[in-house]
Image (cartoon, rainbow over the protein chains, first blue to last red):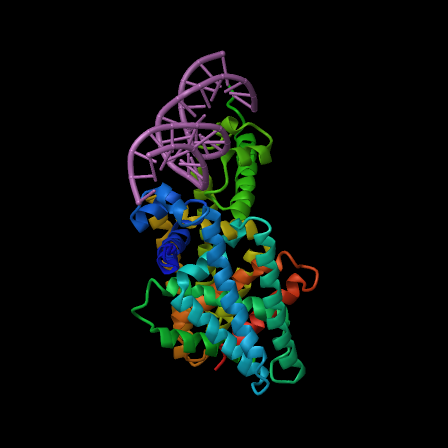
Length: 197
Length: 197
DNA sequence: CCTACCGATCGGTAGG
DNA sequence: CCTACCGATCGGTAGG
């Protein structure tokens, strides 16, 4: 009695999540209908519910997958004792830039639409974000204490860096003039120079 | 035959716009109902339509008032021949910080919800934004040519500055630790230092 | 400014 | 995966 292949289920579900990410990004979570998602996938709206439980489950999957990616990167970075504070900050900035360049749909949905998460997921998401910010702040604070980073408010530095990369949203529509490489270097240089003592 | 006082109409209409700005900011334009706005103002939903024409008119008013404020500040700044390029950039950064600190509801709605503007207003708004960015870029480019600003991609600098101030959204919920003055100085220092040659 | 109400659309379910 | 459909809610109007 073989079960239905889990891969096939996964693949179809993934294509739904991907379509949802693009639509949630473009139109916002609230303004996107399940009929829009269904059309993008090529089925009727009712058929979606064989693969997902609800619209909110789609949002949840997108937001927590992105959050996990950022958290895991920080885990890896923090466990490396040979890297200086400023180098760690630069690595974080580069990672953020690349995430915004390569996974713009998912990252934008996570940034703009996570507020529509339902409890208890909203609280869990916000908590994970707060922890991430705090850990980032601690790296800044350590760098300041060691004289590797200019004396600034660590909290403001984190807000500035994490928000500055949002400009990449607009870059995506005007790719021609500036390459992804130029964008990354220019943004890193601009943000890192302000941190040097 | 005296008409109904225009001031009274203006005042009531203003309170509707203000309530709409707060709700559009919190819940998003699409997820905010006219019944929510009505409740905030203290009337029935149908009564709103004695003061406004439609929900989209409220969004339009918010977005274009903010756009006008930014454009007019740039007009004033550009007409001042005695200020250097770096000083102009600093003045722009300070103006953005203050707008995000003092008019967070309206500025956030303009930033996040303007995509829900209807044509031809959406095109007009995006055009005004593009012109603003281009003028800002020209100030940067001039500063680079004159050696007052480090050689970076002007477009990336503008995106970085205009997006970095979005971090102030999160600052608003944690005001205790950092004052508005500290925020402004730390953000200006962080962003301006990266621009010095 | 209110009550009453409209056509449209929403997320989701039943049943096959 | 589909057709058919549900109750709820939406922006907005009629009429007073």
